[in-house]
Image 1: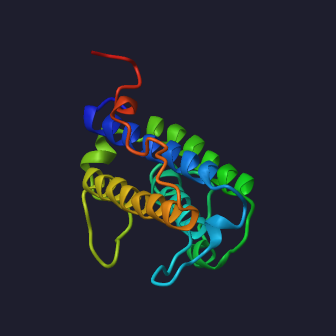
Image 2: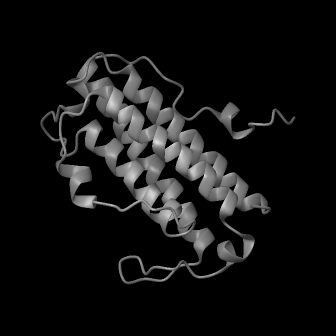
Image 3: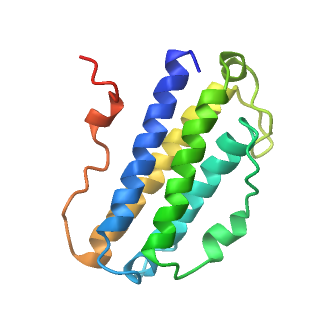
Length: 170
């Protein structure tokens, strides 16, 4: 991908997915990510499955042609996977998105997204920005969930600006 915008979206999405991996690793055991305290409707485990599935579907499959088939219902109904399996799901999403963004062309970014989303049509670059914001929204929920169920305010550098500059440019 040649465009600066496309590269920025890629860097931000991969940063958020790496932070998701750190968040899951920071839970003290395999049960904690699946807790749903009062007032919380989605566990961290289900949020992680949803974030990975959403991006693999819309970016990996829809834009770059991966073979991923999404089961959105399972993202919210599957329970009690060990953290190692959740992290493997996230690692798969990282690998798929990294490869997918290398296939997405500038023409695709400037064109209409191939699928209607909630009966609306969007330019692909606009929808990718939406997906990045959606990812960040859920990552914040997951960070708060981890702090709530573990009682730990320890940070895992969830939104590190350093990761926006992967080549070390000044």
